[in-house]
Image 1 (cartoon, rainbow, N blue to C red):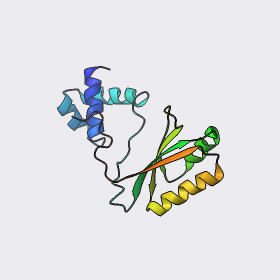
Image 2: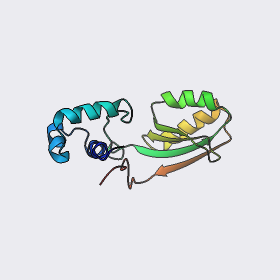
Image 3: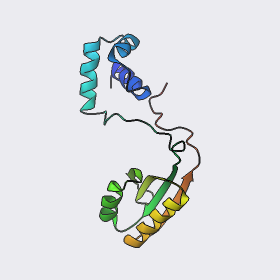
Image 4: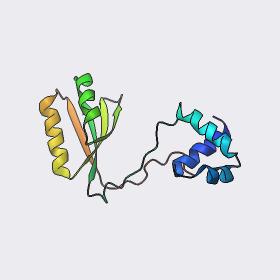
Length: 142
């Protein structure tokens, strides 16, 4: 990746709502060139633009859940569409999946896990309540 493209991506990671004119002044890249480079990155590197939420301030608790299961395909279909699953990853460390779940409290997380155990064949589930985000979505920060 070229240095100028890294500058653009870094700036977008810091604030995706930065106007192109401001970004052009900051990077020294003409606005039309910035537009073209961003469009090119949107077709390959940039997956989308989003807001990062402070779940705690919304009264929500975040849990990391590791799951080992022989029911991989069925569980992926379920978890991929579940409204409490914020992110889902396939693992290769003895557990099959890692998910970040967001719930109103521990009771919601417990009910979610009980439902998974009831509905699917599960070898093991490990749950950790995230008490504080020390760094989130910080890659490419200065």
